[in-house]
Length: 204
Ligand code: SF4
Image (cartoon, rainbow, N blue to C red; front, side, top):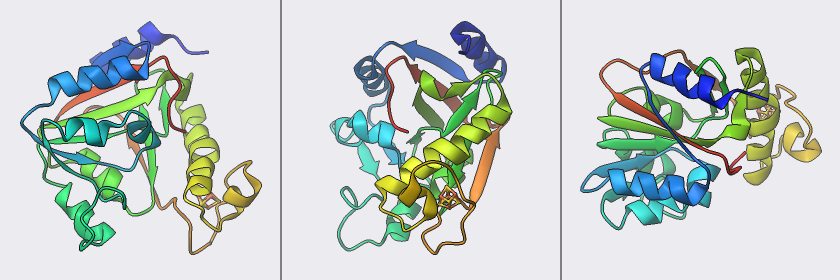
């Protein structure tokens, strides 16, 4: 079990704004109230999908997502992902977090973690507190052995983790989705970063 107040304080000490909401809907309402009249890019995220944030934010913003269900049919994934790199605002989740305010993400193509580091006025990390672990080692363990296998299964990857559903096998599969891991030690210089944390369990 983690200490929520300690986590929120640690995030602020690392340069993030940090807000907690009991429910996903409250968190989504908050983000929608803050982001208007902007270009908005998205990293692939089950949390963002569950909160319907692409469609909700598109009501008052111009949104770009490389996901098949949102991107223009004439664009490839990479072409659509390039459109997310220079938006005013970028939204993503995390695969794990540590109580000391460190965040963890694993990516296959790099568009999600790459865009989270540079190129925007503001980045929002939206995730539920079940992803917050007492230590960084446990956050990395979660990202590798819980979040990534679940994501691989959702994406119907032909990987051992997706078939067995128990842990990462550090596979050599052509469908491997884990090629880079980013440890966010502190909010990036020159980009406003905000964590929106929910009590309601969302995503993987
Ligand atoms: S490295 Fe391979 S086995 Fe491990 S989580 Fe990623 S896709 Fe699954």
